[in-house]
Amino acid sequence: MPDKTIRSKTEVVLIGAGIMSATLGLILKELQPDIKIEIFERLDRAAAESSDAWNNAGTGHSAFCELNYTPENEDGTIDPKKAISIAESFEVSRQFWAYLVEQNKVSSPENFIKSIPHLSFVWGDKNVEYLKKRFEALQKNQLFKDMVFSTDLSQLKEWMPLVMKGRDESEKVAATRMAIGTDVNFGELTRSIFGYLDTLEGVTIHYHHEVQKLKQREDKSWRIKITDLATGQKRKVYTKFVFIGAGGGSLPLLEKADVPEGDGFGGFPVSGQWLKCINPEVIAKHQSKVYGKASVGAPPMSVPHIDSRMINGEKQLLFGPFAGFSTRFLKNGSYSDLPLSITTDNIFPMISAGIKNIPLTKYLIQQVRQSTEDRINALREYVPSAKSEDWVIERAGQRVQVIKKDKKEGGILEFGTEVITTADGSLSVLLGASPGASTAVSIMIDLVGRCFKEELASAEWQEKLKKMIPSYGQALNNNPALSDEIRKSTAAVLKLNN
Image 1: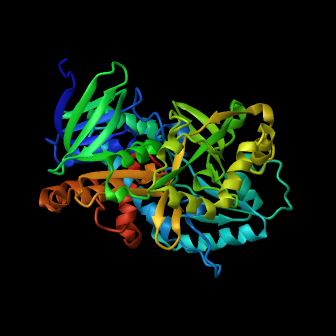
Image 2 (image 1 turned 90 degrees about the vertical axis):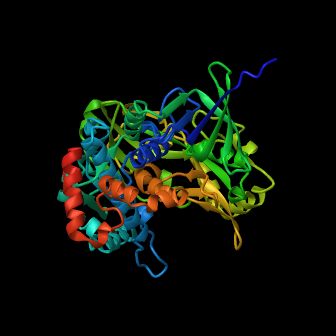
């Protein structure tokens, strides 16, 4: 019987149709317009998993309000390094998005980004003291110079009336506010980018296609076996470079690639749920993103926030997310994902990380056991006047936290984004979660530097990158004049408050 497998050659294969693949694909096409790219997605549309608006926080993780990015040191001082780094990366993303709008590659910025204040809110003497120290550590930096701190009740009522309504006025409370915060719908942005990519010569997007195998050949190129889930048609693609940006599906594909750089990596899946408001009058009363302090042992994706969002053209009000445990690696995944991911290479790091993260396990068990009333009570810490009948449960996204080998610890659980690249630069895999989408442009430019080193060093690519990212190669936090200029110009193009 003749082999009916379809065979093709390309220069780049992107696996997963989320914000990361969209960003990388477009950056590569801008840098080298004649490059050939094939994109494979197992679902029937782009941005259906982690990039979808219901499946991520949408803060535009700029570190303005997320307290987990500013840990308190043992001596009581605040470490602002991670917050500054994330804020820098978000400014890079804004520049790239503004470039896409200016060049008519993506239209209607109001469909994917809107201005909304970012607030951090705490109560109790110790937390108020922490927030004040955090404010002092951040506000002296250029990227956070517009941050405002207040303990004044009348001011807080003006900033967040829904949060302050019905609150005990004898309780010590404080908040910081960044007026230039944004709400980003990464699902809309991702679909817009893929819509543009689909019009370009040399780009082919395959939906309903699942990657079954990856194998590196002797000449360092890759052979990828793929199945069309709709028809059963088999396909083999030969390519020089592979990027795996499949969210929770990246780890199993890294294991299939069988490269030494992937040894010892495991994943710990964390599921999530929101409380979604269904009362339009309540939704209309909240005009900000208000982040609090995470519970002890909570993963970063579970930092509580009461969040005004625009999703599918409608204003939404969400609280959460509430964490949970599932053995699925994707929202549309299989319950066998976790057990099938355990190998002789990663079982020791996974056991070791599990033993060291017992507080996280306890926290997840507590979250899973919560009733709807327990969740409403948690909501009332942020919205004292909340009524049960105004809120329903909405399923949020699935995240896989990275577990990796560590010589000292045996295995460590990483809360963040991890990019694994082979020594020859022919394969790159993105694992992990927050801050992810918001820093996608910086992550992908760094990846290009690792995997297309010679090309990036060329004057042509350098010039094009500076056109896309005017601040490329410069730290905005150290350059007040450039920072102000960039923020002003991107705000104008993206129709934001500066």
